[in-house]
Structure formats: C-alpha cells, structure tokens
Length: 457
Image (tube, rainbow, N blue to C red; front, side, top):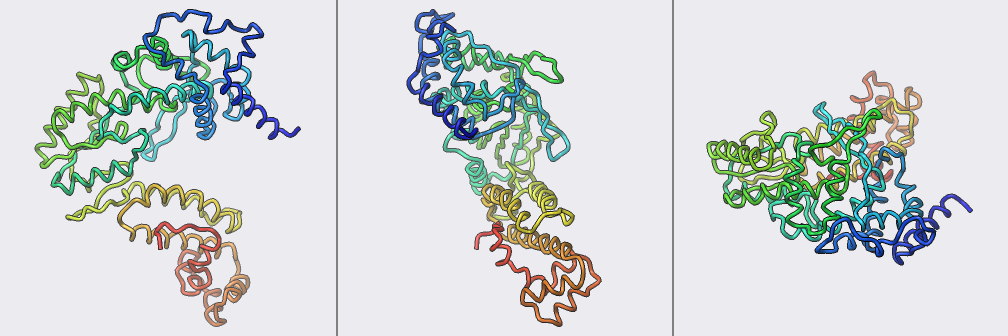
C-alpha cells in the first residue's frame, strides 16, 4: 500500500472515530471514561462538551490541516496530525472533559518585518493548534454577536477591505484628521488577569476557563529552555485573535460611549475627527484610558494625529482632494517591487515559463488584496514594469547578438529592426523598452504564458 493511500485511510479512520465517538482506546484500559469521572469543578454550562463534539473537532482538524504551518516544540507536522489523533483522540477528549489537559509550551520564532524589526510568534504544537481551533469555533459563535460593528479583524463575514471602505466614508463625511494609534507590542502585553476577568463574565464552564488560562501560561521555549509567560497572548495560535478582540472590545465600548467615529482591525485603530486640536485631545484621553483600564501603552513614535493621506491603514491610504480614492500605500508598493525584483532577477537559471509560474502565484495573492484600490493607473504602471523586467530577463538569457537576432526574427520583427536592436550596445534594461522587444514580447505573449494582469481589462 502506498504512503498516500495509507495516510488517507488513517485520516478517514480518524473522521469515522470522531463522528461515532468510538470508545476503542478506553476499552483497552488506557483511561477511565469521562462519563464515569467527576470534573475538577462543577460546570453550570456544558461548553466543553460542545468543543469536543464530533462535527466541531472534524471542522477544527480540517482547518488546521488547510492552514498548514510549522511544527511546534515536539516537531510534529500537520501531515502527522491525523494519525496521532486516530490513536490518541479518545484519551485527549477524556482529559479535556475532566479538566486535566495540559498544553505544551509554544516555540518562539522571530519573523522579520519590512522596517527591519521583527515580530515574535509563539508557535503551538499542531495538537494544541487543533484544540485551540475547536475551542475558538465554539467561543466565537457566542462572543462575536456582542462585538462592535466598528471591529473588523478576525471576525466571520468581516474584512480589511470593509474596514478601509468605512474609514473612507468617515473622511467623506467631513472628518478631516485621523488619530492613528499604535498599541505598543499589544499581543506581548495583554494583561492575563484583565483578560481572564472578561472571559469569566462570559463563560460559566470552569474547564474552559482553566484551559484558556493554561494556554496563556504554558510558557515559551527558546534555545531549549522554557520561560514562563506572565502576560500576552502569543501570536501564532488560532485562539489568540479571538482573545485580542475580547480585550479590545473594552476599548470599542469606550470609543462608542464617547461618540467617536472609529475603525478597528485587531490592534490597528483609527479614530476620525474634524480638527488637529481635537485629534490631540482624543489621543491623550484614549492613551490614558488604555493605560488605566487595560494596562496597555501607546507607541508614541508610531502613533500620530495627521491628515488621512499622510498615514496608512492596513496597507492602504487615500488620495488628496474631495474624491478620497483608496490607493495602495507607498510602503506596500515598495515591498511589492522588492519581491518582484527577487523573482525576476536576471541571473536566475530558470526558464521564462518557470519564472512566470512563480510570479503568477505571488501576483494572484497580491492582486486579491491590493486590487481593491481605486487607482488603476498604479496597477497599470506596475504591470508595465513587470513586463519590462521579464523582457530584460529574456534579453539577458539570449546573451549574444546572433541569438538575439534569430529570436527577434522568429517573433516577426523585420530584419533591419532586428539587426539594429540585436547589435545595440545598450544593456538589457534599456533594450527592454525598445520597439522591437515590445512587439516581439508583447503583453499577449506574457498572458499566454500565464502572467496575470494586476489591472483588469
């Protein structure tokens, strides 16, 4: 039996087991049934039973599997999760139901940011990601309905595009200044006691409360050593975004109470006001509120009161003038061009077909997000620039005048123009804008190779 077929059979066996809640492992005497044991503390609701239901854990498994991701401290990969759960799910479920399950520490990973700094992620084991996902699915259904309509991050049916569009509407309503607040290392500084207090108000199942506390305090492994975690919700686990929204729901309520126009996406919060003076007053007041109520600080170097077109929000900004068109932020364009530059480097020893395939994967994802902008001329210029990069690459690959002359003739360029271009002393970038290469390597040629256009035609 092949490895792929065997893996599929194991996953199907696991799915069959969670659907039927099969007690096979218990029959071997590995654990007492949860039904015959008393939980550590009585629960006035049965949320943990809902977390462990077959359909919920099946959905959680599929989500963790599709999200892929790196292994945690135990080295187990997502591909190995199905086999592990087939062997151990009944025992794990029993421990969850009686409140004795203990998460493993997360693995600390530093992810470089474009500004040269780094974002610290805490990568849970795939088993803990699976349990967190199952837990998050149940809690999100209960909590999401009470969250603010001004909150757009990590919520079903809501998106960054909706947040940017709402911000634009505030601007068009006459709110001419933005209070752009950056909460200093928010995910690292969430106060556990404040967070757990919010959870305790909403959850009456002591097993759930205990499990979430265990995830918050499970520790971080770095360099083989485990350090305790006394604050923060480590980025990298499925539960962290939901917990962050719960913490900042307190901020949403306060901003609403003060009748502010605001948009929040996770820890990115923009408040729209009608004057610079009002903006500074709001910044000071909200900074004080965050410090006193949530024990969080504003990063003064990254926060500002400014005109909306001077700031970026979720990778976008707006144009000047009454129209207030959504445009791609300059930093996002620069990051894009750096990445395209890497993918189209002239010294890469691959074919044009391979290069276009790799480009297409990146461009389709980028277009899916930034194609939302309302300035198609920018997309048009980027399209032209990408094709010029590809023409430079091919001109470099063709190397010598005789090969270049032959390639131009093969693509229908008349003899005199082909000879003139092939014999030019100019480099690939200069030649890439020549009439001969524009005709020989046209837009339709690159489209035929599978190159997507950023600007819809």
